[in-house]
Image: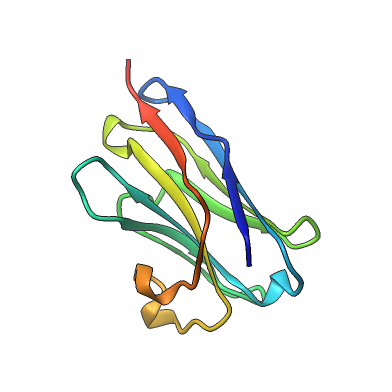
Length: 125
């Protein structure tokens, strides 16, 4: 699966952004999609994920209540709606895909086989 992330930018604290990730290939419904982020000098961390075949969504504690992951299977696209953004949300956001996922592994980057190129999100006044 090839992934193309977009939608990043510069936003003030408290603002919102919507990231998109378009996937190539067939059977998008059968793919678990995740969002990760990496801040300068830090390791890549899990943000949110949408399980395949209409399964559950998962969020990092830092994202709960502020971020929403959704998917449009007809458009082969997953979204990350981010609200009430904070400076600590700054980083490169990556989308990732896996066709084989169990819930306990969904939080780990090594569980995903394909990655997009990343989109920069900067939260600053």
